[in-house]
Amino acid sequence: MKGALFSLLGGLCITMQGIFNARMSDEIGGWHTTSIVHLVAFSISFLIYMKVRDKKGKSFKSVPFLYLIGGTFGVVVVFSELTAIHMIGPASAIAILLVAQIGTAFVIESKGLFGEKKVPVTFQQGLGITMMLLGVILFQL
Picture (cartoon, rainbow, N blue to C red):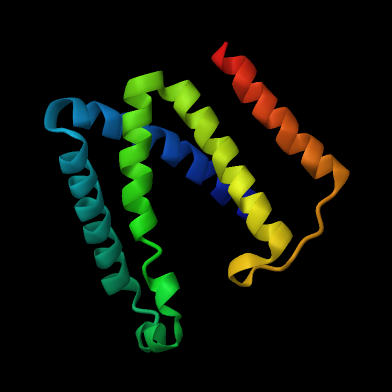
């Protein structure tokens, strides 16, 4: 239940962030917005880290380099999403983003990539992904 609540919170925040960022980029541009968004996010994360200090900082040495650069995806996410919202509107941009996100997660799980537990693909999952894709296409018409 807790995981579902965090997922709902994340979905709400991704949508709100995209809209807020698109509006900010109207005034200052996409790359300036992306930079400010990440500077603010870093500042908040650093303040929380300084408060929590869970004593796991030394564990960085055991994390593969590929995973340490995962935050760079955030730059692509913010810029792509705010640009998409400008071009096709929030509802369409978020719908396509969600299908891309679920499709990518589906491939990662089904192949067991990046240390994820390999989950066999079921007919229902394939049908669900197909229906979502068709739903986004219908939404665009």
